[in-house]
Image (cartoon, rainbow, N blue to C red):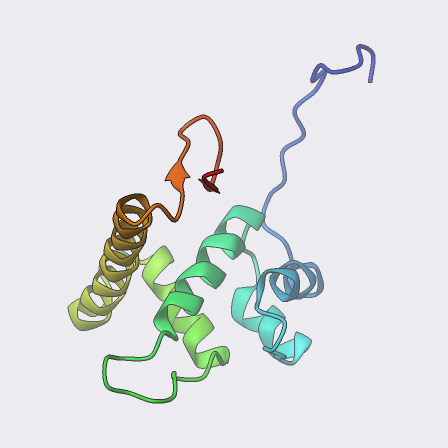
Length: 137
């Protein structure tokens, strides 16, 4: 670095290979999920760190329990592959795309409900200058 606090050079990070992909993805998965690194690396081979983050977030959303369902579906390699397919190919099976879109919409809706209810009952307020809720004193 030539000038502290400034970016002197942009370093491009391209697609990662199996071992590196598995290391990045393992750090993004929930702590209670343990997938074999070799299988995880194979499922996510040649993806960028940004794609890995999006794929793991989509896979986690796919594993939310359905209404009335006691146990959520497992977060496994098949779910990771489904999430990657939805990112790479927008022309995937419409049923899978619809399921992913519905899950995303539900999460956004629930987040808004929490925000509105929290403001109404004095739980806290959202400060747009910061991320997250600020407690009322």
